[in-house]
Length: 304
Image 1 (cartoon, rainbow, N blue to C red):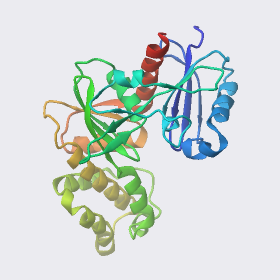
Image 2 (image 1 turned 45 degrees about the horizontal axis):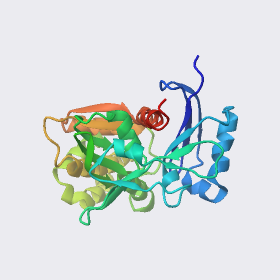
Image 3 (image 1 turned 90 degrees about the vertical axis):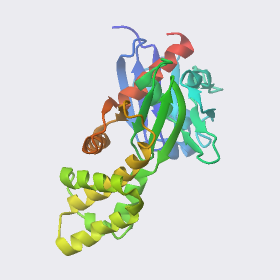
Image 4 (image 1 turned 180 degrees about the horizontal axis):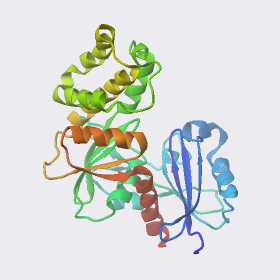
């Protein structure tokens, strides 16, 4: 087995994921924790990273490439943004070195859309794009990356032309926990009610302007006609995702399938939503995409 070549880290707001990597992209070891930027900003990034490197027995000469919120203004070292239109190769050129460290540590920048009419930023998702689509300048794709803050990205010629962020995941959490609908979803089981979800997606996609009304109907329908907490939860989820799809798919070219970069429950839900709307799509696992993106970055930075 080949020796490790570098360490790849996806450092988010609330999560930390580290992989010990061979040059060919094979994973030799990994570490995961909830030591995201929010928790680590007070205790120190260097110490947390070193504790995980020590746990895997990583030698002092092995370099580290990081994406995500460690490069935010409130993070370890600000890695700034590459402005749209941005070719994915621009991300690699913008990697920032962390000073004062014994090993070579680089943090990748995010991407900014400095449009006064539609300002937007991403940090971490650019590395998923790099891993899913590579550096091919012929690449054209309409990409959906579900999450707490979902991203829809228009890629043409290997370049991020424009993108939009939707607070779908965060809105679901707030609506289901802190509004009157909390009563409707109390005690909901974990299994997905596919029928309720698909119906809600289709209804919201067809009439996104009715969003606030569609959400209140979750409560009134349950009061007047009954229904499970599970169906109520999936109706809320389907309504919010349907609204997102109505906006995200607006400028999609019909011949271009949506590239869905997702994993776990969100992957299943967005696949169901796209199928319900008869929208063609391709899927790539989000974790695999970020690892591949970090591998591309490591190869470019250290010529491995």
